[in-house]
Each structure stands twice: as structure tokens, then as C-alpha cells.
Image: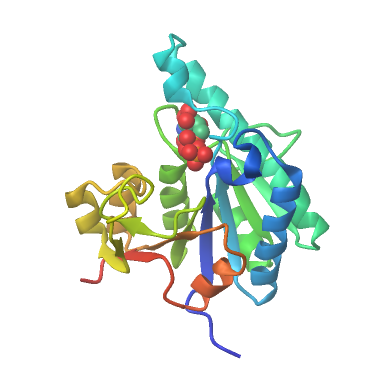
Length: 241
Ligand code: UDP
């Protein structure tokens, strides 16, 4: 058997990945398909933590631009990520994967509070841990959450699953047919060039903690496994020049 490149990964799914063709909301069939793929990778002995965004349900910034108080809007967004986490946890459980949801905003009746030591113990016991409610603070994103939690649990890599985009380009491939894809980049280059992969805070955390980031297309079945096995797909961002 091929030895996996990464032993402990944090997978970041955007909320939109859960919406399927509908683009908004949660499409349960789509979540079930994703859970199947995650379960398969997990069965090969990889420790997996998940951060799921909330953009399929709500985003704080546009709500604030429309006149809502930003902090309230962001708390609303964080609650959306918990809905996504619960649905994904259910789908993973149904695939036979022991799963725990930990939230950064305490809600004891539905999930565990985020406790790093417990999260590590779950991972060691082969449970998938889903981190909900972002980092628990407004003005942050779930990309930053992914980078922060990846650093805290000492993940080998963040697997950033994108919806229909197969890596990082020098321009938007949906708008510019001549856009060129990078196979490899450094975190420093991403920050310097202002490439829009994750926000700058998330890039800085990944750089400071030497965490690889692999950006790849989630819509192609089998891609998570390919990344974990070290196949060159998507774009790898690291500190190696
Ligand atoms: N959010 C927040 N703090 C966090 C994480 C998320 O305030 O630590 C809010 C913010 O309003 C954001 C929303 O939750 O717009 C949904 O998260 P995000 O936009 O990162 O989701 P994604 O784009 O990955 O689906």
C-alpha cells in the first residue's frame, strides 16, 4: 500500500460545497456523497478534522453592508456553520465514522465545547472532529478558523476543498481563459501577490506554523484521497521555496 503523505489533516469545506447544484442551503444528498468520500479516506488510517464554512446559509459582511449590526450578523453566520457541522456529522455517523462536533460558542445540548485536548484525544481514538461556530469571534472567517485549529491540533496540512476550482491561478479562471494555474507556491508569495485563496490572517497563521495548504477541486470524486497520498493535484502552498 502507498504510504500517505499526510497523517493528520484538517479539511476545510466551504459552506457552498454542501449546497450542491442549488447553490444555497443544504442538499442532504450532496453532504452524504461528501461524507462517503471522507469516510473512505478515514478508513485508510488518516486522522481527520473538519471545518465547514457557512456561506451556503449566511455571510456576515453582506448583511452588515445592508445595515445589520456586524457583530450580530457574524454571530448569525457562526450559528450557520454549526448547522452544517451537525448535518455532516450525521452523514459521517451513517457511514460508520465516529464523529464529534465541537463548537467555539458553547451550546452544550447539541455539541461539545471546543477543548483542544479533547479534540486531540478524539483524533487519536480515530474519531473525526468537526469544529463548528468558527473561532467564536466576529470579524473572522472559517478560513482563519481552519488555519488556527490546524495549528492547534498540529495537522500536517490543510486540505482546502474548492467548489469547481482546481487550484490557485494567477487570475480568475472563470473570467480569464488565459489564467495560469500554479502547482506550487509559498505562503509568502500568496501574501505578496495578494492571491485570493484564504484571507491574509489565515495565510499568516499557516506560514508562521509551517502548515501545508493544498487547494483542490472537491467536485472530482476521489480527490481527497489523491491529495492525502501525495499525488500532485491542485496547488500546494508551503514554506518550501
Ligand atoms: N464567522 C465569524 N467568525 C468566525 C467564522 C465565521 O464571524 O470565526 C461568520 C462570518 O459572518 C462569516 C460566516 O460566519 O461570513 C460564514 O463563514 P464563512 O464566510 O467563512 O464561510 P464559507 O465562505 O467558508 O462558506
